[in-house]
Length: 126
Image 1: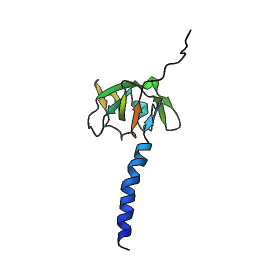
Image 2 (image 1 turned 90 degrees about the vertical axis):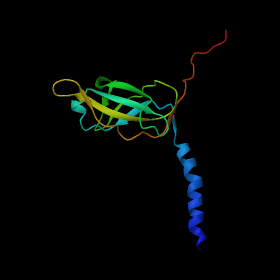
Image 3 (image 1 turned 30 degrees about the horizontal axis):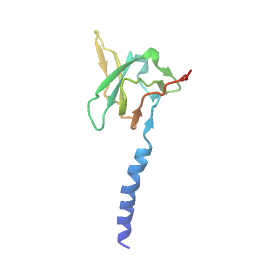
Image 4 (image 1 turned 45 degrees about the vertical axis):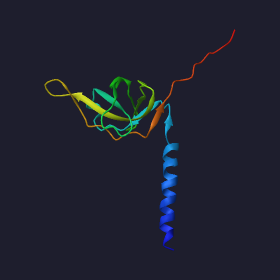
C-alpha cells in the first residue's frame, strides 16, 4: 500500500514533461491580452525570452494603432523578428507627465512557442 504514492509520483514525472512538450505552439500568429490601462497606453513592447532568461534577447514595439480592441481583450499580429524557441512577455508604455515614456513591468510569460521559416508558396517547375 505504501508504494502507491511512489507509483503516482513516478507516473506524474513521466507524463507531465510529455504533456508540456506537446503544448508548444508552432508559428503562432496572434498575441492576445487584457489591458486595464489601454486608454492611456501609447505603445506595447513584446520581449522574446530564451529558456529561463530574465531579460529578453530581443524586443519589438507594437503601436497602439496596430492593436485590435475586443470586449476587454486586445489582439495584434505576432511580430516575427527571429526564428527559434521562445516565450514572450508584454509591457504597456505611455507618456509620462512632463514628457518621456514610462512602461509597466513585464506581463506573465506566454507558453512556449517555436517560430520556424514559413514555407515558400507558388513553387513550380517549368
